[in-house]
Image (cartoon, rainbow, N blue to C red; front, side, top):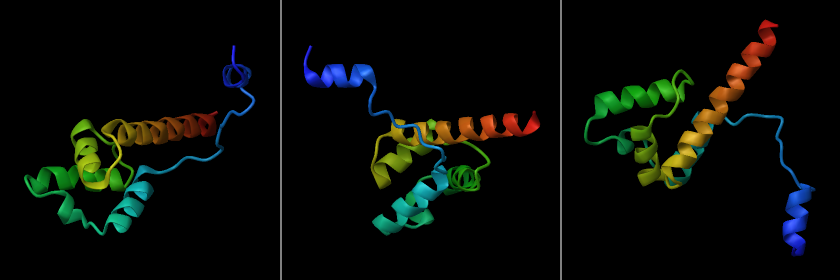
Length: 102
């Protein structure tokens, strides 16, 4: 067994953040970096996609597959990255609400 295998099996360097990243903040920063506006993201069917996008930017709904693919093609990252970012946020938000209810 090599050094790296032993190191990661022992989990000496684990990362467990005490904060949650809002997907909307990451998307805003990515759009600014790429100099892309909301309307630039949605050309084909702007009403449906833009409505879903606005709900997601207001943290109302999670990122769906279609939106993740659009973000991936325009801003980079994989669709799985955008979906995981959203899922992690909403899971943490639900956990926080559960803790507050107790």
